[in-house]
Length: 433
Image (tube, rainbow, N blue to C red; front, side, top):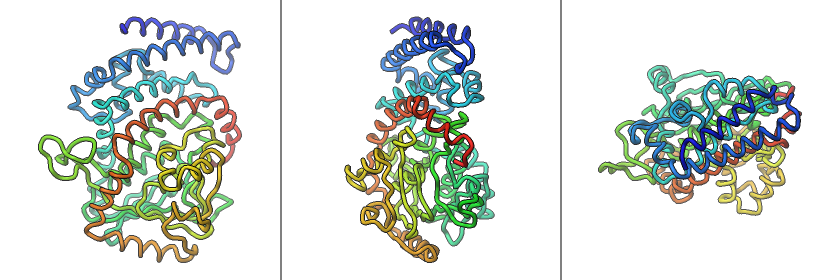
């Protein structure tokens, strides 16, 4: 397909948008015309990327010599291929609007990233780029290795006796997740993996100031629905960076300069060592792990839960896809329980028999600290890292994860602009999460 055909379709869409009022003030006729033009442009974008994904990616990355993260990649695409994805200026306009008042330009990013991730050439290179340490983590590393402490808005990271303790500390919103939390979590995970003095990582929620849980520890309330309603949850900066960034690093480890090769765990260019720096991880659940909190537990090597805690992935109620939960949950619980949790909103309490597939230990709340110390001690063994690598390679082959994430990129983009989602999150416009 010729680029000019797509460019003409994009121009027709932009002309209609420019001539129309704000999205919430448009007439039914204007909405219909803009929707039709958007659909045609998206059909042509899909055709273009299906045919040229590798060529576009090579152009943007200098023949795969530059390792661009997803945010950098879509920005480079916007500059090099006007109309293929939204520009920074267009996204800034969208970001200033509530979710219900946007034109859904992030869907075009989803189309672009789906094609890149689908490619067996470009996709592995992008997944690999997302496993590299962030510039922010590299800036903070000297301070952390010297002091053993970094305090950020959403996460506190402390090294004690060779253990990196990550504490989620959004105390006012029950550790509900947003772009800030994802940035802080990835920074903390990077630092824990980069620091040679750390042998094990441990994640727990901190004490809350929220009125309903004041003084109690809480693991996570999942995605911040108030932020989603206000338009502050981004596809690239939150929904995709979260999965391809720090959660993937928890599973696969951190790609560092001079280490190994590409997808699949074997290095290129004669590299013979394991391609990432990886470490075992423990999670401790106080109160609840809802949504994204529940998703996190699926990648940890050892999970401890308080006896009064529960887990849930209320995707059907929120209207969105629970990250890679659909990919991972059934492997642990079996398909029937996974459908009950994801499609019907079932909560699984820590003391239920079905929780045995998700939680390794259930202890009384007062005994969590002691259980954590025992767990991190067990994971210090010299063969633990190697065996977890082989377990993760067998359970979650990188190429299968990549293919899942390709479809997730577009399907989640469509979901966050679904009318049902916009209606549901509107109920949380004044709530804490």
